[in-house]
Length: 203
Image (tube, rainbow, N blue to C red; front, side, top):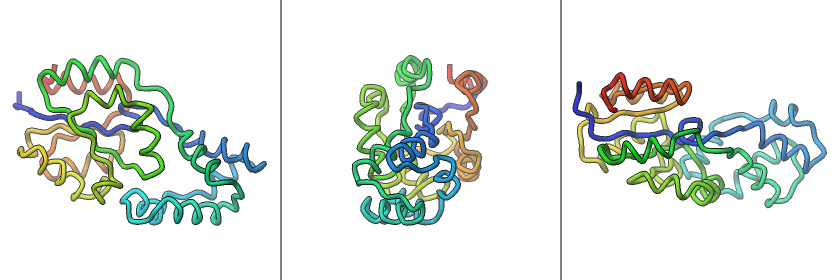
């Protein structure tokens, strides 16, 4: 078995459960609009990616999305809806992290933005304390699957890519990590993730 030293966890749908549908349901309720219509108009476009890299501020993104969706709500209603994405934590994840951190350096690497970060850092503070460090795309100015995002984490760890495992639910994120030598694992479910860790000899 390889001598892995660190494990990088994605957050959304790996450590914590999220639902983008909740955003549109909330905005629809606040605006009297149809949730499906709002969802269809919303795109994970370049402006969204810029927001996740911290290249534009919340005010600019709110204005952009409100115009694109024809949404007439307050900033507070926008943010409450935007942050309505967050659900419960993945069942059994806290026990898993507590067990792993006794033998491995645990890092979180997440694509996120300035509005979301204010929510999840508080809501999941106890859970996140199991990580040595949390890297957020909007703070490091790079988002997965960009190579730079992984390089920033590796520089912090001061270790070789081959000594690191990435757990992520996005295939492209895993592919890029694997291309630079990190052991990438595509996460489909909590049970499958644990099975993969066992297969790697992690525990």
